[in-house]
Image 1 (cartoon, rainbow over the protein chains, first blue to last red):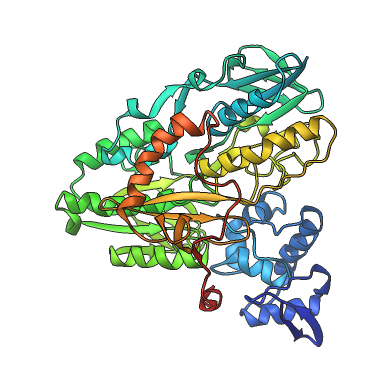
Image 2 (cartoon, rainbow over the protein chains, first blue to last red):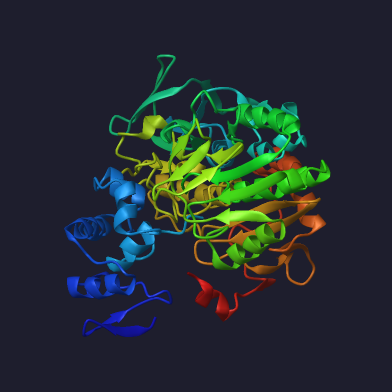
Length: 104
Length: 420
């Protein structure tokens, strides 16, 4: 896995640029990752990202948009407004988590 | 006497019953299967039924014919599962205690979960499902009388049972209208929440170009918010609209309702299990097999078959206090009908995406992977015989449990780069 520098820190990423180590993420890194995909982070965005981080810590996988709605309390429609077009992928990317498990 | 209770007498439940019956001594163990009815439906046939290939009588048989003598069979709707008290209640008033529980109650389409989808003004007159026998029959009759317009083939949300079936439906519809000499009167759109025709890059590329060559328009990243029955329009979460004259949708798929609130299942009522052993997360005597579990593999009969082969020996080890040594690799093997008497085959697992090559033997095949051939189509038709006569009964079929790389062409490095 490549190592790159984001916000002055060395982090491991996969071939699509998703962070691969949960503990290498911090909020400065999130800011840079968000900028890269044209998302400017507001309190509402942070609510989603903090939910994703906490949920991953207990569940071991990235929450789906449905889970962010039913467990995190943020409607899917709002997730689309905050992270346009591909919310599941964009939320996980900014939160330093794997892309939600392949819908095989 | 110990009790193994198997919930569901479908593909997975029947295979588990046959497998455990062969492994467990009838002096020490009693095996019971529960299902709501005695009609076992050959679900792969539902894809072809709307195009007139099969009749309902070809697809339905008695469940108990496929269970071994000595396995107890109980009919009733499951109303409650108490995982702490180790009992299952049925609509008949019966309470069934168990020592070990195997949940194999599958997944079902739930059109009621999307606003407007099952509106009486459109449901099964211009909006259809085909994963149920009633839905497939209603669609067959509509297709036979339809004079053309906008056909929309739609997936509501992943995961779904048999994830390639909606694509196959689109390919077969293209072929069906060509044969009826009315393809020019039909505009076909494939609407999906995924970012391409399929999730895995190599297969997505192959299948995507098959949509293009058939002039089937792809509408990706579309998560439906509601269906407007007045204007006959799908409306997405980000307010895009797709109008239809005939909608063939795969509604939200959910596990059985009795699993909600048991502490065993996720938001979609899928039992949360270890993906290698199928043991439930918080209960040492509960397993889930087939579509009912949350393993990150296709919800498909082939996956259930390979899973059951791993499960049997593990179960014996587990009940005798030994560690479970075999780990399931997520192996899936699916035929994809592409129309005009041809089909594709894909073979993959948790870690390896579907690749091109030949199957199951290197060089000689005879099946070709990710390529349209007549042999693959005949393989799909022959599978119905294999299903009833070999698969359900647990007799050997010539495909190894664990996926093999033999005969496969690894993905070109470019494939990874093209992932969006």
